[in-house]
Amino acid sequence: MSARRTPLHAWHGSHGAKMMEFAGWDMPVHYGSIVEEHKAVRSVAGAFDVSHMGEIELSGPGAEDSCSRLFTNDASRLEPGRSQYSLLVDDAGRVLDDVIVYRLGPELFFVCVNAANARRDSEWIAARASASTEVRDRSDDLALIAFQGPSARRLASSLAEDLAELRRFDVSRTTIGRCEVTAAVTGYTGEDGFEFFVEVGGAGELWESLLSVSIGEDAAVPVGLGARDTLRLEAALPLYGHELSEDITPYEAGLGWAVKLSRDDKIGFDALSDLASSAPARRLIGLEASGGIPRHGCPILHDGRPVGAVTSGTYSPSLGKPLALALVEAHAIDGDLSVDIRGRTCDVVVTSLPFYVRQH
Image (cartoon, rainbow, N blue to C red; front, side, top):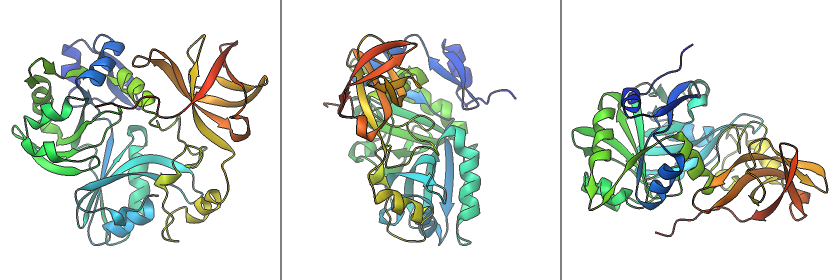
């Protein structure tokens, strides 16, 4: 089966993007230099086509109750116009996906899910939502453009003034040019900015508007998935299939804060309650390496014995050093650790997370 294409696929091709298959989609990796795109987001702003992500709408009198039962965080605490990070788990407490839940109205919720899990998530939610909840998979109807960086708010607000006052995790509907968009102050880079959900027919116009706006010398550049990954790793944001999976509990991943055991009919309640009652056997930690770049799957060693593995690793353009996230046996974290990189042992130092914190 051929890879799916976003509404902006032709634009990427005509602007020299290197494309690759990701989660069943043909996506841009970079337009020239991953490092330069990364630095542009850290210094000014970047636009990302992330239309491969899935979107699921829950509406009706039972929508709040369904979201409160189906997701680990407490959706009942959301006021309209607010959103929260959450997890989707099964009855055994195994993580099926990490998501953002947006509340657009008293009886209207919207969930952004990972591309590789979109169909499964939609079917899972629809099968378990209450009879008074309508579940619609909007993934084919909507495009998603992320606009991130220290100048992103200023640039976007020149196109829609109401964006300027939105706070972190706010969500609001607005108009940019002729495009009606749902704007959320969420993102995956560690920078300020927005994620814009728009009908697929308006994706091209919105993309051009965001890349055309400038204030003085500040303007956004297009950014591919390569820099998106280095940016999210510096910010220590999890990637499903790496820092999260059915084999990694929320507590091992350091995401216990996103689990609210506020009702005993919540999916996975018993299993999550048991997990919460004791310290996790493994912990996700941050590492700085010397002598090589740790990559996903590289063993972490303590006294020559494997005690875990790298979940994600890269060379950090912002910090100028190799960084890694690793899932490690909790008892070994305070000891001397090293990493096996293709048969060569390299020293690592445990460091606090996130690696990068924005200063602006």
